[in-house]
Image (cartoon, rainbow, N blue to C red; front, side, top):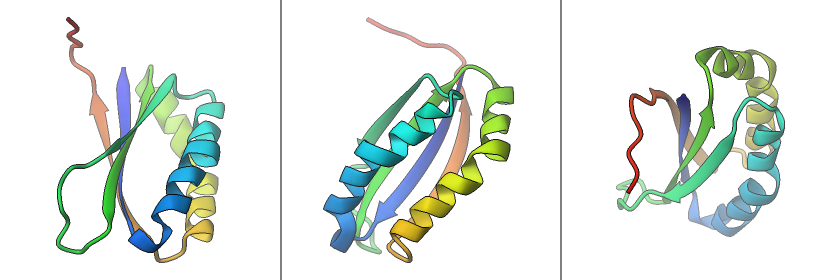
Length: 105
């Protein structure tokens, strides 16, 4: 299993609209690609020197091949929509994680 993590710092002026859009439109669209089995939206509890509010969106997929297909087939369009909706109001970086082992209680 793999996690595609997107960390996003959002300008406070668009915060409420961004949360609503991510929850109602963007994250469901990413899941609708069929490449991920779940998503988790979390607030990062660190005060940024640059201001804004930081979030992490973690999308879980079953294979690196599915993640590569997402990058090729879906990511450009979905990133474009985000940039078009909130131009110059956020900064993002992406990381890929491979789940080595999961522990539950």
